[in-house]
Image 1 (cartoon, rainbow, N blue to C red):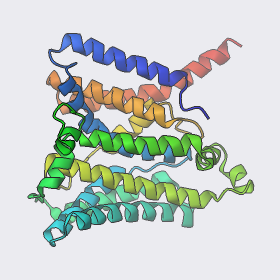
Image 2 (cartoon, rainbow, N blue to C red; image 1 turned 90 degrees about the horizontal axis):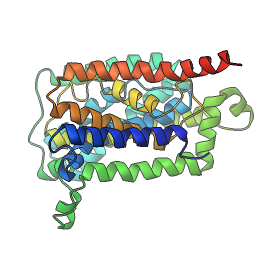
Image 3 (cartoon, rainbow, N blue to C red; image 1 turned 60 degrees about the horizontal axis):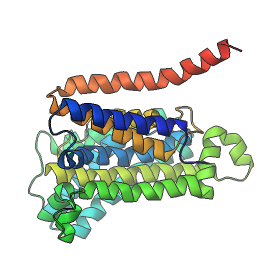
Length: 321
């Protein structure tokens, strides 16, 4: 299956329009430093959106992915307070994410429960655990290496001041290459499409449907953990409301990227382009001092539009037959 299609080219054109349009309207928006800065928040959301895309293509969904981020950040904070080094802190965060994702997958595959119901429950469970354990407190005092990961650039690491690409963006691009290759260039990717298109037929064709579903939920937890490490390093603290509402942003990115909400269709390239588009647009709104509530309203309206428009186009096409 091709990674690029007509919708991906539309998204690419919209990205150009956003950066050119706001570049003329906002002083400094199109500067290299502003563009690099706009990728930080987008990079974290792109990580969880790619994992969400695979789940939705397979006919599942994970609404607990942002709450998992909060729990992973908390695990990393506790590891730091216990005296763990960099490896121990990363292991705590990644292990927590995989455990959360695997638990979601176990509930879905072992007990045959709808993933939307399961992950609504675990959303409350994971976020509630973070609230109970931290309350109104925050964990701070993270080491310099974590702050460097969240706020530094590749130039800082390599000693090249002109290389202003954020480390977060580089990590996201590296993971994007892995996701694109797996989804569009391997038999595993084709099996994920088959599961989403018709899970019963996929099972009869010899595909281990439940095993793939469990793996996809575990990968979603792992990507949530990676995003949590980056976000914690960027803001320098762990709070129970970390990434609050990001599941909505991730779903918006996935659907805007052309992934069919009913499963079986979509591309990781489209999801990445949608993340860049939404990230650039919200960054521009931030430079215009638009409030967070207004941005949330825009994201919610955009989610409704991108779900309704494809169906409206299909119905219009059927009306002309």
